Length: 321
Image (cartoon, rainbow, N blue to C red; front, side, top):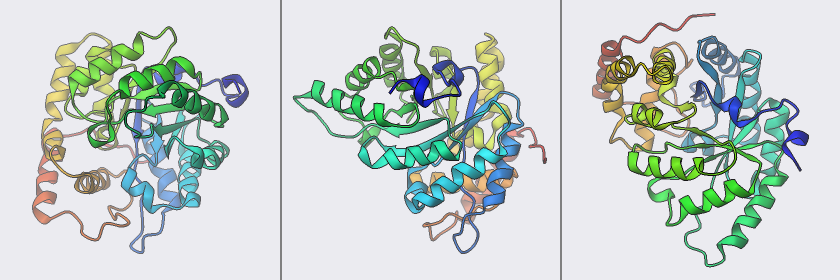
């Protein structure tokens, strides 16, 4: 199955370049139910910001695991309702295996234009060529083109760079990569140049926090950013300044975001999610900071630190629509 057959909208790697994709969270009510209208509302506010190319949903692994398939599709559908014409909706569907075929098809029907998938953490395999052929065959069955999220930390294995590069060279289904699972700039540079050495267009989208300025300077094509959820104007301005060669302004924006970045660094995934939820709620983008499956909210001290960080960076107000 070729891209022209599965993607009548003509999404290409260049559709993922030139701006920012905002990774969003799902608003829940006090009973843990999804708030559908606020999902559409936050999508509308985000897509109204200049420099935003689209939204990525269901990207937070912990939150994703608390949602049923129907709920994940509802998030896709409600987000699509709020996006402006021409904006791209990315839907994370989990690990690349046979189990995602149904979800990818449903995401396409609900309005997604590409699927974000994680490579399978399989470790060293003597028959790597056979595995790459199997993965490429699986990609050909998907109803959407793919952005491959490169693993880091415990989710990264020896030879991953070589394997994803070989897969990218093999499968035309892969349009791009989420490059920035952490802020290891050496690893980012090595991954980026390995992928860009291929003789085909591939969009590389850093999603780091502390190293975003470095990664854009190195050559990231766009941004897929959690940080843009709470500071969308600032991240889009950082991208524009970097692309325009105005590195003084880009560095100044990056430095301005430092209090928030520092607050996030060194936290476990659950606390980071809670910080993002509380910050997005403060900014008027998330209807409720309630997190399904997390019994305790942020501590009072962390909430105070977060409020101080937001005030210190003085982010541009979000327009109410």
